[in-house]
Length: 204
Image 1: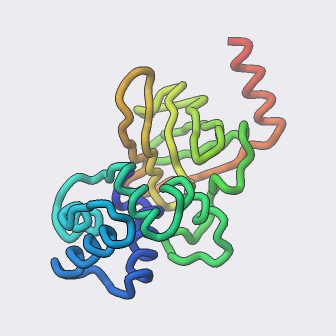
Image 2 (image 1 turned 30 degrees about the vertical axis):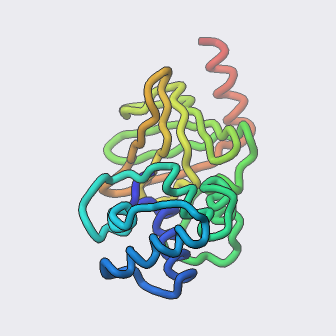
Image 3 (image 1 turned 90 degrees about the vertical axis):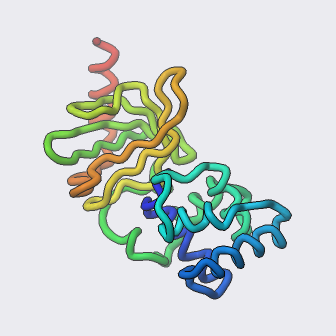
């Protein structure tokens, strides 16, 4: 997942609250690595933490195993459990999650979501449950019908961070839509729209 995704920003904030410290110096990251080792008996490199916090340059994406470990540090079973907790929060902890849009926790399996972004991109996704989506329609974008990915939300004005994007037998990757201007629209399609889309697909 992209380290600038709102879910990861929230994770960083939750960890800083947990350790009662803003991570700003090399000592801070070494201290957190030590706390992870003491609490979970697992190793995480201070360098990995520095990259995740943007203290040093490095990969733009973060490994799922790293996110699971940090979620466990906060007391969650894994990264998916942490994402579920974010979707269920009634008190928004961070302004990165404020604003209009669609959140996975508000959807039922099988429901369709349509998003658009500049200059003329449009996609329709089917929610599969567990923050997982399948691309049903893709117009003027690198995403393709049948692609599967994970996302916790689609927020207007914010980029879409598609994590663990899978296409056929290819290795999972990440994809960012609307990186400069964010998503223009994010809409849950009505039952009538879903039925029409299904009928059109069947006809093809």
